[in-house]
Image 1: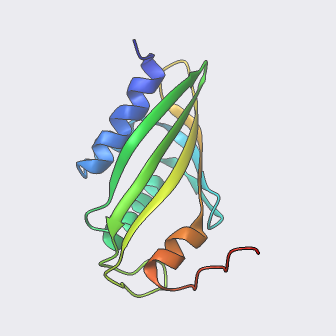
Image 2: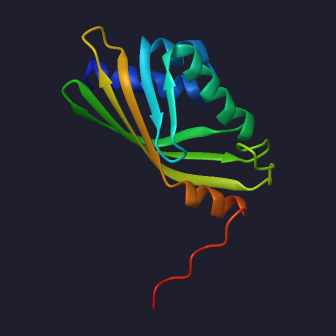
Length: 143
């Protein structure tokens, strides 16, 4: 049986897939911190997090979280999943390419006693995304 914290994280991911941003941000504490390490983005609070989610879905309108696996570590939940989508909008300052991306992601959430995330760290390999989008050339394999 999944823990309450895992169910909350799963609910947040399902809400993202359904573009239900209100449910998604409700899983965060009011003044939670959220850090996306790949691009050095630090967010505070629900409003900034909601805008962050909307930038991802503007860049990848069909974005999905798939193959999610969750690990309960007491007051911490670790989620590993695949981010997938077609780049049909600007990704930051980069133009849409129409290319599909599939990237492994790790999200670590510290939960409070009310079952809300108070601090979240998101890790993924931005080079993978940029290469799949055609903005970077693949690094040659080592000999």
